[in-house]
Length: 521
Image 1: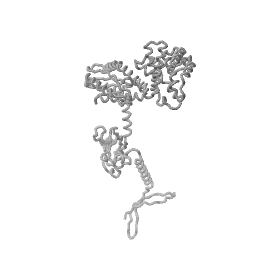
Image 2: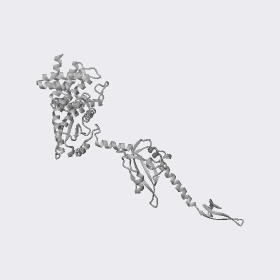
Image 3: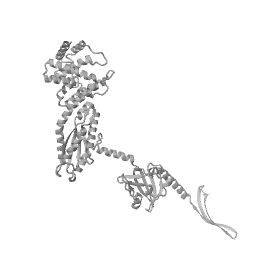
Image 4: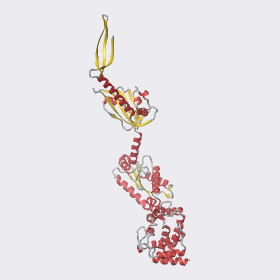
């Protein structure tokens, strides 16, 4: 009778040995005999136990990692799948084990949805690591799709034979979205969403071929943007640019390339488009633009264009001709727009602050009367009357809530208000109709003694018109516009002007002004 047994024996040194016995029990002549072999398997058992622990540790690690892991044998049958792989594929461990790898790991090309190659078969054939490109979609068992990135490596024994393949993969959705966002921003204008200068320059080189002729190029420039920024702030200016971008895009065709070059400039590339069609597209844009407003501000864009017919013509010269044409049109169109915008600015200010309107009208009347008394001619008197009306136009750029603040103004509020002469100067100097009075507005808060703002001018360094406006403004403010305190009587105001004559006010103008006020009474 054969037998096998593992026995624990004590050796002479007090140690324990694990012995595997293989033998035979025999009966001979009525006696029982044993013959066999005992083998010390202590070390092999220790190694076996260590290997088992290592295997469990490896399996636990693979189960716990954040990436999906699937291993399969040399025939492509799945041997292992971790929790993340179950979630990504939609297959449970029990469903996946023993299944062909490509049944569970169903991948297609992101661009054309064609079935991707069998990465496991490729690894087994080449005995090398393989990675899929980042245009791979994994289709889960429920039909849902997600982009993944993955790699597969062969499991090779000591003899160089491939035992199987391990595939590691992860959800690429978030990373892909970030990369797409980076790519979008690298080729698009962040404010308008149109293509940017970089993309335009690349497309211009690409389109500059014989098959795209005739190639037309439209240049556009938003009129009055700087004036809007100075008057109403950059938020409104940005809205104007976004409106312009939307109108231009809507008016163009699918194959046209619309880009913002920066600032207030836009460009449109029109392949296979002659001069007639380019003009039609400009007319379409202008018609749509005429219906658009941002607040009270009308959208106005000056356009120029040029068409390339000859393959040997330099495309940069075509661009320059379109740009020059645009600037020629802008010279006339933009001036009218800026003049119109100044009117809108003063209307907006007066609509928001009724007291400012009444104050400005009184200052205008007083200034004109004082100018006439001093001896200004008809034209200068007319300009002075306009300057008096416009002297506080820069307050349109003052932060909301300060001009009609119910409590006493603090130092920060006053610092903000003191910006208004410079804002008014920028607004008026941009419009030819009002450019001559812009300096008067800038200097209207200077003082005779040089302690005024914004430039600290003194004496006759200050324009005569500004000195006149300063005293008319102060008088009306004292008698009509005093916030948080009682207004001065006429007598008190005259006394204050007398006191400030030679410091705040030109003494000669102060004398003439006081005579006017006394005679009115």
